[in-house]
Length: 281
Ligand code: PMP
Image (tube, rainbow, N blue to C red; front, side, top):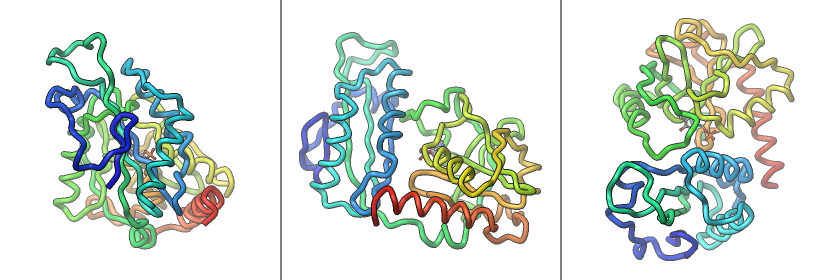
């Protein structure tokens, strides 16, 4: 497998990360996952923009222009002959002797690699089971930080219960999933948490809101309580890799009749069309 380490394309086996890389010791960095359909990077511009915005929030300077990064990622996909899967990229503050404050004169470490992986067709079709879990993460969830322990613990809890995702809440108010954004539909209106420091501003969330407009589904960016979520006609989640996935159960309570709903199906179709036109499948 060919990967990118800084701006060099090398074999994965030849890549070395220093033991004092701040990504390794502090999780001091950010990442992105970009879906590849038909050899094409879906919503790459939005992902690159978010990568730069998040880096700025940490005062990490990405040493490439956006155009160069775009080209580097396409070259990587081509080199690995990736058709369907994703690109993972991350940047850390770099290598420095261990102190918490930002070291001076440090060069960031950039890594990107491709991962083959089919689309989650079964989940898209049947929907997934979920649990509620307390959102124990920090107060800057808008930053796509490498620190994922809160998400890891919640996802593990879901996994142990045979569920796909943990729906996180702060004092009974739903923020987002451990690695997804969450939406409810009631009486022909879609509800989702507003964009602020409690959630990641998902690229797929943004695409979904465009789909809502296209199919005439009104959107209210207002958080749901867990109680209200259970009374929704439909629940769904979005992420780069999960796309638009119906949620059919939370904590063993079926949502409505326990089957993916009509609006969700229409949103999936609108999403599919966007994928197809973006990548000319
Ligand atoms: N929220 C969290 C906490 C996530 O980790 C992710 C996926 N990385 C998302 C939302 C969805 O974001 P996107 O649609 O950009 O993949």
